[in-house]
Length: 439
Image (tube, rainbow, N blue to C red; front, side):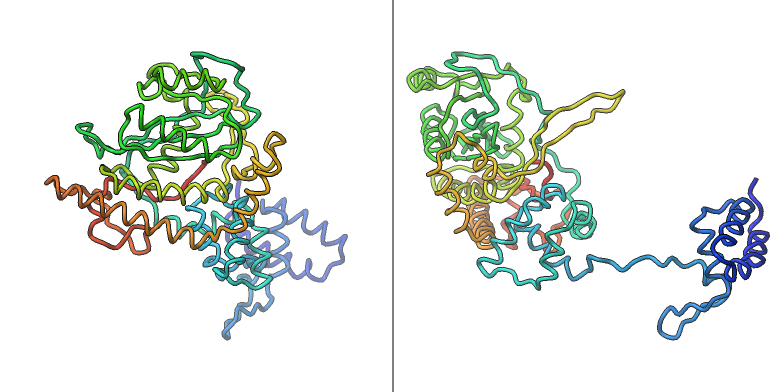
């Protein structure tokens, strides 16, 4: 049974003077009696007895004396002050608004790139503090900034549960996800909500082992254009292509691609019908890369095609060189909960360098390219091309006489959002730019 507060105050007053004058052994005895009588936590009780009756200066002429002086925590000064929020937010923005667990791994590389090209200047103390921040500290410092970018009431393609099952069509080797070269591919339709007529598609290819991702826009889903886009992507991969896995669309399951895989000795598998989670790796990139970069608008025409491919040529550098991702190692069901275990966040570039199956000449070329990339300038160029793509989408909608659709619904654009300032943004169909999570 708890004793009343008034009686506790009397006990503090009676024991405080004796406790403050006693030796160490006597203090232990007094503290034991006091804790037993009041039910206080031992550390809190000792603080109450030490501080009772003493004068405590709180600054600006404020002095507390008596019982209240023992109620203040000593605490410690903040190690990461508000002066670190601005440089941290700049790095966070340049890394496409990553979560703390991924940002803490991508921060050193991004900071080096920004400093190398004169985009950020930090004192040595600030720099060391940024580099030793934990993921929890990063999330805490960015919590206010992150809340400005939260959109509600949005829907679209989102990554599903990580499952993988292949139904082989023709194989020359078993799938080995422990080495680079086995990829998943999928098409992302830019139809703006209407499947009538022709519209652009994005061919998305993701390597399972390294997470290396490539995107190529094509005029439509005709197998001729899709195969041409696939060949361009293959030429950009930093490792030999060993196998591909696709869905059951006719743009992939056709004689042209099957014969090519037979001729090139490539493993070709397909997913089960109506099971998108079979292609979970590329389905995740459909959302985190394609949809977040260009949204859900309708894109048509060769000019827009050129701009989209220009945009993807820039985004591939940011995604593969600077954005860490976590790979699922295992998941275990405990009762009604599922516990997932991930590996350490690494960029696709880092995973490629760690692979012993990638040629040294290729690694050297990748290092040189990485050193030459100015992350801040790269993001500025990405924003410029995104604005151009959006203006073309608006022009096409006006030419077709289609009323504009707001990408934000009832939510107004906030100041500082990474949306272009032109009124033409109303023509875009839901380009999501909120902070990313696991990639």
